[in-house]
Image (cartoon, rainbow, N blue to C red):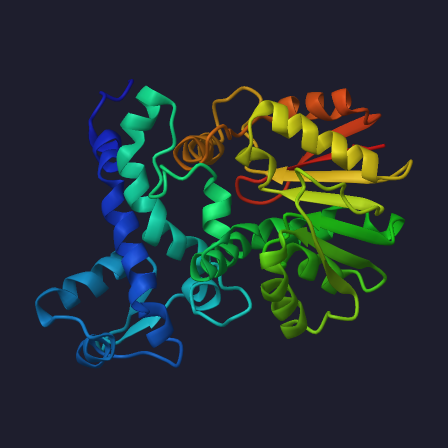
Length: 337
């Protein structure tokens, strides 16, 4: 018999912002950092975080019910294996930078999605700025937070690219829009024969170099300052563009792909990774929601399918293309010149 429709899924989706904001506040308040050294009881954890006793127990127990904290028989709270690895600041696997940005900026901006859908105009907190990225990069604190967020969103994809792409066939690479340097560091650590560079606006340089040095790779990774709209891309064997193309409109996407083609030698490769929408546009909800995020955040950006990207790559002159899944919602489109 066919089950009767019920509203549970709809209500859960509609109220899912409760779960999101509870997790985002936990990251902001340092819950997972406070438990990095071991379990703590309700009283100690409440005092450590400076929370009011009225709500603390419900807050921590909600995190237990959401499976991001554990609680033992003695009532002591502890990180789960996942939150211990990925949500404790300062640890190599920390991905909370993206969640910090979501809490500080995106959560409020997404409250204006209906307006964005009606107007086609971005709704971020600096919506009146003529250049979103220029305003972002002009503020050192916001820039550092944004670059950390990009590391968080790229960490899993970086590991998969390091494993799946045939790096043995190449000697050099450049990550265009390198941000803090998560992708170059991950690739270089996995393949000692490679030397590489991060290409980004000059303001990023000190942050990139600090991150690379902290990972002991300053001898093989360097920073190349530039503006990919106004400057040619560095010559290299492989160019990586991660979460870059979706920021821009179609004409700008095509221009960046052509610049990559021009910078590569014959046999060189371009790797574009994004939360690519499935070709049938039915399954990768994250990719589709990311495209709505581009509506809210940018003037013309949008996400795209693997087939879309391959078509643009061939139009730019690349002779062969393929799409491979990475992990989570990300895939990479690879084009060879």
